[in-house]
Image (cartoon, rainbow, N blue to C red; front, side):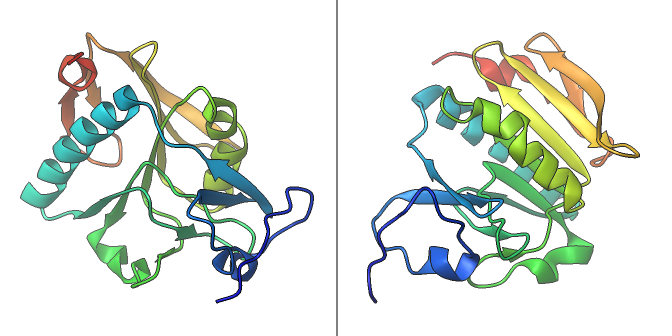
Length: 187
């Protein structure tokens, strides 16, 4: 495979992205290649706790599949994020292919990092809405909060903001209750 040099000024397609061979993780947002740096340890601790809780609930209720990054989600030829956590309902499991997810997950969870927070809140948020994600969670490790968004007429509507004293519930995953004190506890 020929190695392609990454040019931050050009627009990329998914096909272009597949030619890159440099051991870095990238997301493709609006044709722009975004380098995804290695997350902080608190990011990964929260990720692990959320994935375990979601996976257990989804498995127990036979609702579908919970998947964690890195995995490409192909939304269009110029949009390929790698959400931190995603859920796909059992009715839509056919969008899972050997190489990637082909279409919008039902639920996307992004855990903010200093280098990705603006992108997660703005560009990726718009992209997920545009492509039909049914619920979007933004997790802020520094403030120990989770915001749950649901689609509105023209943009996301805030369903609820939660902090580490709250029990998170989800409109999409009816009956799910997550004690956020358990998710945000420090090692």
